Length: 350
Ligand SMILES: *Cc1c(COP(=O)(O)O)cnc(C)c1O
Image (cartoon, rainbow, N blue to C red; front, side, top):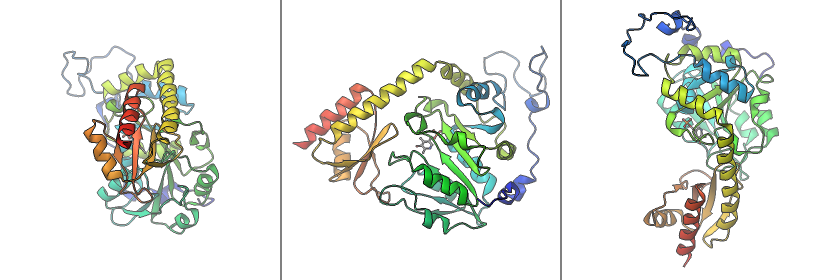
């Protein structure tokens, strides 16, 4: 990143100039007092959800701010991180002109979103150790290369990138660096959240879909400078996080012990599963994982995938991705589910 970071240089001009939609709930915000609300054409009869949700999710953000130690003006919430990623691309990338960089093998949505918005996706594969190839990435530094997506820990490989490489990219890449931390709560490595103040071009995404066990409610979180967040706030749909999601998330986030127990149990299961998988004759290798999944190299991924389906187990075949020939990705399940997986794999050895 150049010494003088200028956000205006990166944001699309129409977004910079955008006057956002002003909702009824924006124009009158004094929720404390006992008012009669005749401003939003809602149905007045109580159904628990007859009122529009808080467009700024204040209560939920306050809980997250307390747990993550990030102020609420550095946060944007979305309908899953997929919506957050979509908002980011729409804020910075001009269709048919701009490009983004992704580092395959990685999460497939970055490319799909780039394709949807007609943004060129420059793919710079990881090296043999599944680390970012710095020299190659920085070759694409240009005014029109707006964003770099770093999935850390990475999906589908499960590893965390070297801290030094990531900080070099933050220092040297001219555009926005998005670090997708969907799996960070399974990892012992530290989050990049503490680096937000140091890098004006850093954006971090997290989600309640994985470690927090709430994939069904769709809640993704974007952390960035207050300056970046204020741009993103202009283009987010006014009521993108519904009231059921907001209240469910608040309740479950407060149950810290239960959350912690689930995460610990998944990590324990992953550690024991990793050991047993290596004893299966047709599993050639596994990549040490900082996540809740394990990528295994097998003798014949299509064949093993099909065999597992026939035994009632669905895994993910990642073989079509670069550097992932003959790999299967196993999500860590409950102890009973993992035992079933192991028994089945042992049976298939025969
Ligand atoms: C699962 C996953 C997500 C989660 O997306 P949501 O829309 O929040 O469910 C984001 N990034 C990566 C890398 C993932 O694997």
